[in-house]
Length: 138
Image (cartoon, rainbow, N blue to C red; front, side):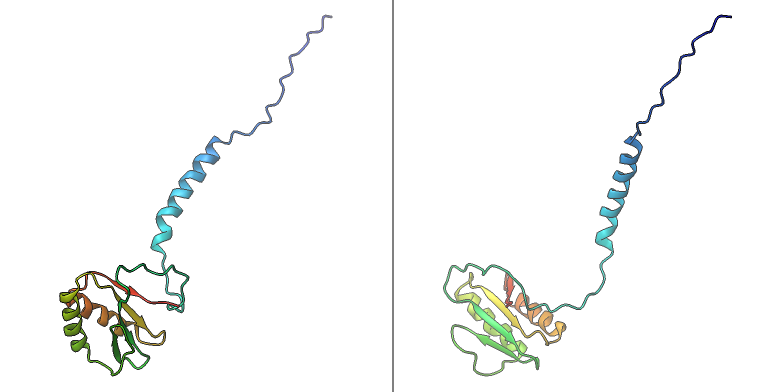
């Protein structure tokens, strides 16, 4: 009897990872598209930020301050003296911007003031002709 030698096949123990890479790429794209849509409200303290100071061409910007009671103060190079009405701020800013169109405007709001109060101030400044308004943080 003649023995035939069988060819034994070696098992291929390598894993084909190409399908796994394809699945991971699809999941990555799905998460990249859906992540910006999942914004939720978070309790944060907005006034604290680590930001570089803004360079100004002239030495003193106009600072409009909103205190915790919602009163407005305008500071044009000195200490603000008296609270100013929102309409009066618009008129004063128009005069300042007419004299110096490149003047920088900064809003300094207390962290406990209502967000709507600061937004209304920014709308008043925009309607007075301010091209941009900066926010002051600690």
